[in-house]
Image (spheres, rainbow over the protein chains, first blue to last red):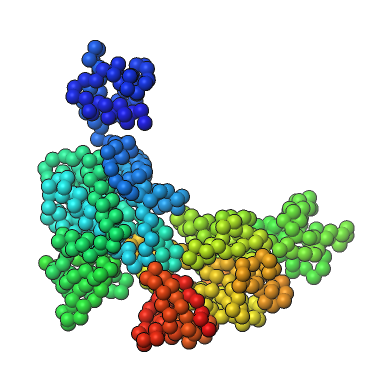
Length: 319
Length: 319
């Protein structure tokens, strides 16, 4: 894509790049270049133009652009196709439709804002415009339904690693897949799927990550990278880091490296060895979260010594 | 609907019904009645018209019509909305879209033919035009994923009962949900679902039932009601019977009457106490099918005495 290449040139040039040079490289007229520059400016790029010197990139917009996200991404599966939308009801629904329409595995749909962003258990996920990353990924793992928890937990590990790498913050995972910074929710993961009997047809992995949100834009008990680290983040770079970690984690899962992924999950766990109360359709159980089972279920030792397994539910850390 | 009422009058009248009488009952002109009659004829109704006597229904078309299916159906949930389509790729996809678009629970979509009718494990389901019943039902049970097998097995029981009631044939259920007449496949059930983590959002229950198909229209090892009973069947009546049995069974499942449904499944089973070979992602197991587990899984006792559970897979009856 022409504009993608122009941005690339502007970014690589140390200072100004002449219209002449771009014209030669892309084999397009000076007038065409000027037109592309105008369009890029309309998208939020601030581009200085000085006679006899040429063009210089002053500011990149804080806007997600498909070609910026895929540019230099270098992943194998996740992000092979990236769709950026402005405001949607939920990226989950968009991705689910793409999944039904046979999109390639690893297709990503991001939105600048969600009018009805969803979290687990039907809860709302606050999605203020341009402040966070709200995206969903379509995966087509050939696994039975009962291996799905592994995918969810792998995603939590990938998300935690991407956040730590980009921000330097130390984060924890609250079972099954919330990312906490000092007990405040920084990010969440939602897994939806289409299955035939107990065989997965596709999975939609949804991630909500509070990036540059300020306190008044967040739900109570939530935080953002900006609040936690005291600086703003380039959302494109954060998104790329998450997609890369997910890509790596997904490949490992397909290579049956679940035991090592589980070890990494346990290292990040805010839940294990804690006293918890967990509520699901079967009722409420209280006890100590002792371990993960091989399939990703949480093992809780009740006060009577009995160990119960939980694959879903609402968890509350008691102390 | 006007045409629905006209058909009703024609069916109820013993002999001819005058245009005058219909005109009075429906408060429409004789010319309007004549126009409706023409439209009904175009749909395949054969209607005799004799001056001074009126109209008489000679032949109903062998065509599924939404208002004929819902007329007198009397179900609580299943069939609250019935959509009839001509040829579709698969009613599963149509119903899945309806589910995503928040259709009411119990919505049914039937097709006269499917160009790519699906069975379990990605197999094709032969769906010749006008010869069978190919339909899908959208259900929204508030259950975790691991209770889904119960829904599938309940459907098999309902389908078997509806077939027995309508045709007098004695049929068996091959685990999990094929309906057999003398070892030949008469009908099959496919379950698809959308879930969030391990909570069901909706289920699409697809049924393919060979009604009036002749031998050359069927897959090898398959049969039809017509071949088995030696007579043709009115597809609308068969469909109504199935919808009624499903409605009853679904209500029982929601009332937690799974144990009795399981007993009925076992009574119809072609699998229990048989030697079977079952293949799934984990490999192949051979042994005696001894029972259903509480959640609907099949229990197989291997020759070494070990009992294994199977929730899905391809089963072969060995003798």
